[in-house]
Image 1 (cartoon, rainbow, N blue to C red):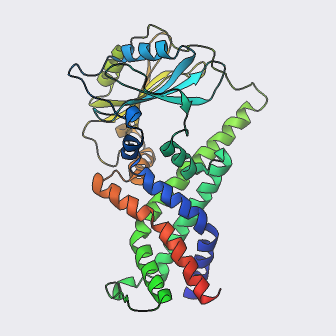
Image 2 (image 1 turned 60 degrees about the horizontal axis):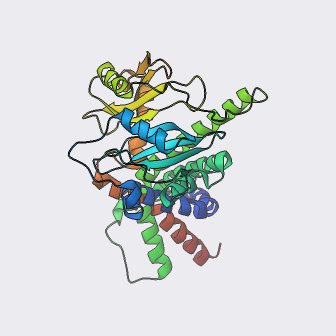
Image 3 (image 1 turned 90 degrees about the vertical axis):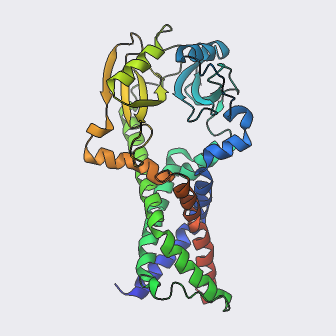
Length: 358
């Protein structure tokens, strides 16, 4: 295929995907620092003051949630990442099936916010925009297509400018705006291409997988029964949560619990999701699980990422690769900057085409 043909394909892909990719890029760059921005925007909810006594037991914190939210049930519990981070708790109101959230102080049990939809706050809303365009499954499918186009743009652009290294350091600032835009466009695109491939590839995989799962789920339930509406506690009120957590740590050596899943419909187990202490940076924070019966507390099963198939381990690496946590603060900054590159590339690409007259 001739370079001119590839250039035309690259150009038209940019025209089709430019504006929505600009939105995805800007929201994605902000979301790299989602926790830090939440701490700045809503410190009264996201941040807590540690006490010398340490966090309350899990059963005490759960009791405080049940007492403070008698018309809701806990459906998920994300434990604070650091000593000053509040717990992020998912709840569901009786008679409904919408997932809501509250923040809780792990040291006092105090509920720091009223139950609210998942996208009620700015950063959660930006997350919804980033991967669904606020259009649920349809928006997720559209974002998956855009992620694929981003990968194609990265590949075609890199091929077009594959000899970039010859004049890479010779950027002429004193030239026409069109030529300057073209020079900056190719340099930014070439430098960002590997990271854009990672972001586009992992994002497309997640969205496609979710859409296919939802289609399969809806097909199975079509005409079978109405969605379950929360009617009350689906787990034993006296469940020894701390003892189960300790058993989970004994079941998987060096296990760090980061999230606890509670039943949101009948028949669902209590599941501890976590990671390994001192694990590889290419491991996610929720890769291994230990499940217990929600009524009896009896051990059910466990999954360990270090014993999973090669594909499962590759799939698990998508989380740190997409979020840029593989190298700590340095890679997060790099992902934030390069993640915004499609925005600059879309604008500069539009300008170049406009100046060329087609």
